[in-house]
Length: 306
Image (cartoon, rainbow, N blue to C red; front, side, top):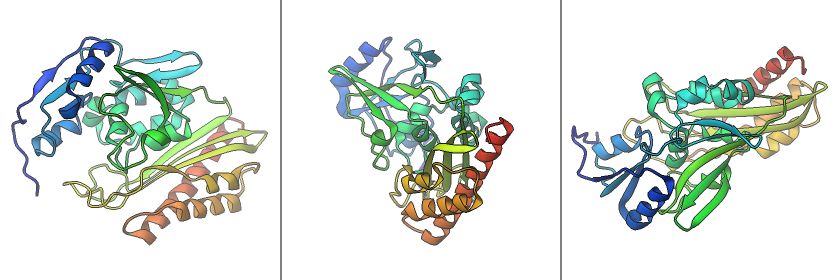
């Protein structure tokens, strides 16, 4: 078992008051600087001496980074927005239910009060609960450094386990979700093994755009981890959450069809490449994809779309 220290290793705290100041400080100290948002991953790692940064750059003194806003037809939230804020937001619950459901299933209430969506993405964990919902919602991320800014979709930001496409001098400052069709319905389901401390073994995010009882567009993103339930860390670098494109194509142009749902669930399972427990993981993906699709069609029916 890893050693937990009561005390954190020594570090210098940087508390910028603006994004510009933060990026300037990060460019000066990028080689050994950790970013502090919620701290639910960083603090335990520092206590276990898995990370011993010389500098910790806190975003907590920068105003406005904890807001969920509607701007330019998009919903935008900053890097300090917590999972409980997402869960409680009327806009997210009404228009982006798949993300609200993922937030609700994230850890426990104490963790959700501190953990941020941005931190969950920047950790780039194989079992990140927020990544797959943001993928099916078409979310884009704004990254800023002292040299400028760039925009990336979630799929390109999170491609390698625990190594986000984030340069050492960059900050993730905005997560933007485009306006969804009023006929879009979504569901997020996850399966956690006993003793997994909330980590997803399997997660399925689904959105269906349904009009006249027919699916115009389907999006499915999957979590397929292996042994992330081990309290002392992952033994395997499982694939990061990914879109199941072939499974999506099976549903397009069809109404609620049990055979199509079954085929899509089977194709979703086959698209996964878990490192261990291969057969069991794929079977659980199949089961939970089937359930997520069925529940999404039921929600559509309740709204008079199917």
